[in-house]
Amino acid sequence: MAFGSGAIVMSMELIISRVLTPVFGSSTYTWGSLIGLILTGLSLGYFLGGKISDRDPTFRKICSVVFTAGLYIVFVPFIAPAILGFTLNDLPQNQFSSLFATFALVFFPTTLLGFVSPYVIKLGTVTLRQVGNVSGTLYSISTVGSIFGTFLTIFVLIPTLEVRIVLFGLGITLMIVSLLGLKNLPKILTIAVILILFTPSSSIVTGLMPHTGTVIVETETEYSHLDVVDSDNKRTLYLNGMRHSQMDKDNPNDLTLTYTKYFHLGQLFNSSLEKILFVGGGGFSGPKNFLDTYPNSFIDVVEIDSQVIDVAKTYFSLKDNSRLQIFNEDARTFLMNSDDKYDLIILDAFATDYVPFHLLTQEYFQILQDHLQPDGVVVSNMIGSLEGDTSNLPSSVYKTMTSLFPTVYVFTTAENNLNIVQNLIFVAINNNEQLTRVELENLSIQNNANNLLADTKYLENYHMSGMRTDSIPILTDNFSPVEIMINPVTSQPFFDEDSIFSQDESRIWFSESTSVKIGLLIAVVFTWLVFFKSTWKNTLN
Image (cartoon, rainbow, N blue to C red; front, side, top):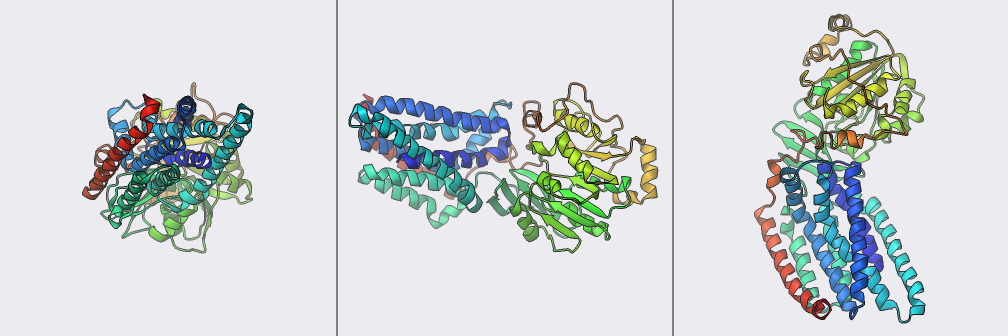
């Protein structure tokens, strides 16, 4: 039992992170809340378990505690959407927003599982002389269980199973283990829970995240929650609930998202694009379009998530091409091990709620500069605003880039509103001459870039004054606090039309079939509570 409780706690921590990340981002706030509340729950459980174990300890009682924890975990996939929606819509949005949701999802079962170690030590100790040996052995077993649960979840469960299926499995596992010390009623309730969850109609159970459109794929990858959703004639790739790529199904090589059209700014500053690198693949809309647009160019794409690459090939019309090379690895590692030089490097590995800090630092941009041809260009997509709190991260990246590149151009993609959150495009070149709008237009006419940028307002959206950099740090490997700059910026996460977890949708939870299942599970809970009260009656009085 000590082994199992240790394994379940660690597995639950990793799985619940997949529930929280699409809503609150993979920031230090999210992970800090999760780790801190689990440790708090365990600490409280150790204290209460040790105290209660001195009152008529029996194996049956601790088994009933474990059964209760398992039953709660089974409910998590059903209550998670309501808890997340309430947190987003009804609570103040700040850096503490994830605390409530995390508390509701993990604190209670973690506290109950904390009972196990001190209680089992009490049951296993015959004399005081054995306390050290018994406690050391049991805590060692519990720790080994935690290690096992961590590796099992990372390498087996997350890559192969849906989050809700894993949570069902964790809860049922605890319930089954607890039956070693329980009588017939809990066995009947366990069978009932399994039947309720896994009868054929259980496929109607809603996912942990609501969607707009037809869900083509919903899965957990090694790095994120991945959704492919069709709406009208558009197919969209979502990672952790945020839009990363979109395709017109009739014209799969067209660029449908406005910001991606700004990638052609590279041709504005360097008309000879023989070798191009995309950092971040997503649905590969950029690489596909560039293969069509520049028939003499060779394109490399580095994408860290192998399942994203597979999804692009299966659902986003990514075809094999002799001019296209795809590398499945971290972008910085790839560049450090490569001797290739590029005419254009496009950075599109950043999201609304998360940016890899090591792809924003001065050391990283130095690596990029070392991999550019003399006339090479870096085009980087960032999300934020030109001014205000939501400009902190883009301003810091701008300052970091200008510390290496003599000229960095700034373009907005929605409108030249200083405070609106939007995609910002930075273009870095090794030329120290800053061009005016008129000079940019003349340059585009000379190298035929006007046709490529015809669908954009790049001249109107050229922000010649750059970005404010006063009191803004240069990002380095030693100091890159990107989490506090992007999520939450202005004490709120970015949620807009790019998110599949919109506020209107977050209030709609369950199909009729799912409601029936919840009702049956609630009946199981009430039955169990009656049994639990009778089991602990003497101890609690």
